[in-house]
Length: 152
Image (cartoon, rainbow, N blue to C red; front, side):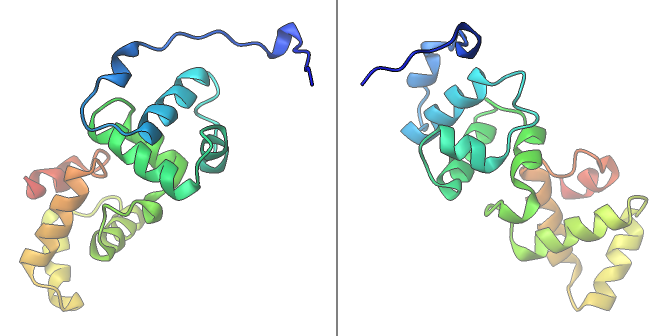
């Protein structure tokens, strides 16, 4: 069986071979990196399902591979967040996800207000700080520099 490829469907791209020698990257992470590199112009509009399909893996495997690439700073966290959303990031606890959702709805919240809410939620200050630290460590507090200070 032969297939003809039209010139318009051929795309040439270059990927550094360094990706194959990065410690800690499995074959799934390498494949996701190659897929994203081949679609650089389109990567902003790609969905998780499309990337997983092109990489010949499940969406769950693609998420884990992308998390590894973010951790190694090989892809931007914003791209990761855009493609998977906060609730598919299994590095975050439910407390951190809930806090992030609250912060998105109350963009102007201050540290003092957030800590006052700990009294209303049944969570202590330590739990709030732990969730903030989790969000900070995983790149979710970029839009909230004031809260990032509390997480450090």
